[in-house]
Length: 166
Image 1 (cartoon, rainbow, N blue to C red):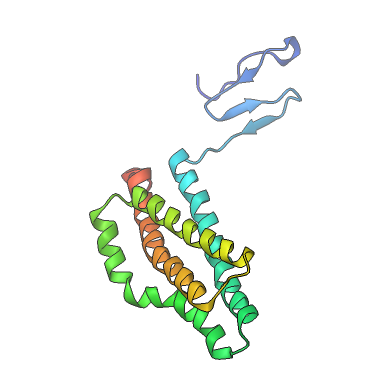
Image 2: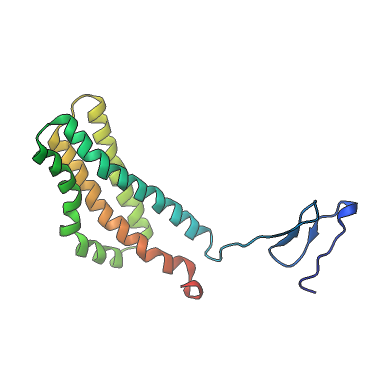
C-alpha cells in the first residue's frame, strides 16, 4: 500500500515508504524531491553556468588586459568591441549551423577552440609578449564561439528532457 511506511526503527531496519520518502534514524520523515529533468540536463546546466561565468570574466578581463598594454581609451574599448562584434556578424550563421549539426558535439568542439584561444592568450601574457592584435584576435574568437555555444545550449534542453517536461 503506497503511503504506508514499513520497517521498525527500534530494531535497526531502514524504514522506507513510497518513492522519495524515507524515515531517518531519528524518526523524522524526509521527502526527497528529484528533478524529473535527468542527469544530462543537470550536467548541461552546470556546464553552461561555467561557460557563462567564463564569458563574464573575459568581458571584464579583456579591456583590463588592453588597458595594461596601452593607455589609449579607444584601443581599450576596441577589446570589448572585438568580443561583441561576432554577435553582429555570426548570429544567423550560428543558428543555421546549430540546426544542421548535432548541438552537443558542436558545443564541445567550439568550447575546446575557445579554451585554446584563451590558453594561447594566457601563454603570450605569461611570456610577456602580449600584443593588442593577439588580444583582439583571441577576443574575437571567444565572441564567435560564444554565438555558437549560446545558441546550441538553448536547443539542447528540449532534446534531453523529452516532451513531457517541456
